[in-house]
Image (cartoon, rainbow, N blue to C red; front, side, top):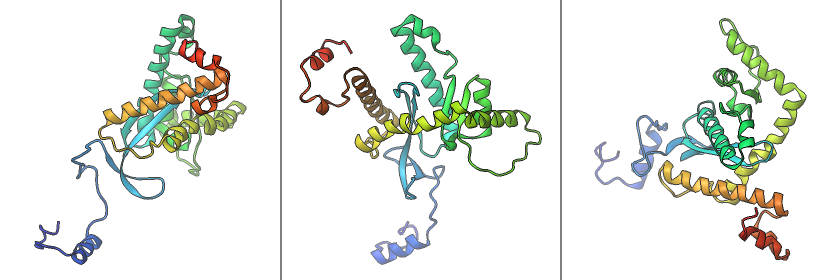
Length: 252
């Protein structure tokens, strides 16, 4: 930029002066990272701006197991990415049920999850209408948007009011209380304890492979806790030998 403006050998002071005057906003439509085209400029939760990717999980509310992980552009909103994540969750659940137990496969809805529990970031008219068409009951927390105008939006009004009624019900309150435990815990294990908050991999394909390995580790730890009361190898220290033999024998 300095050379284009006519400064062949800019000093630090000149570069700082140019940086103060230049346009601060960087558009993903105007600029692409040459080293990682899949990365997107986005504002993080702490207010800083970085090149980032967006990972989204779908978790079974009964067991806490991760049933789907998707990796999408960080500049996409929750209301857009939820569709792909729910579709993969339905496909993965139906595929596993069909391979493991024929009776269990009959209990799985081939059209996708029958109930969807999310935070208020996923609440929108379009999402609620799509979930209603898919015959999925939504329990999505709703932000306070004040009085709304429903003129010409009968379908959206029905979907929003139905979700609001379910959220205020006994089952809805119970599911939203469990969301912090069942949905946020895998994020803590993978991105905080597991160190995936920052990655040096490039490309969605490579990063998604790493996420799937971490997700499989979370599910394996959950299975170990349910079967043996210990979900980490360190906790197995001092336990009887059968705990190890049952793992190697494939009984878990």
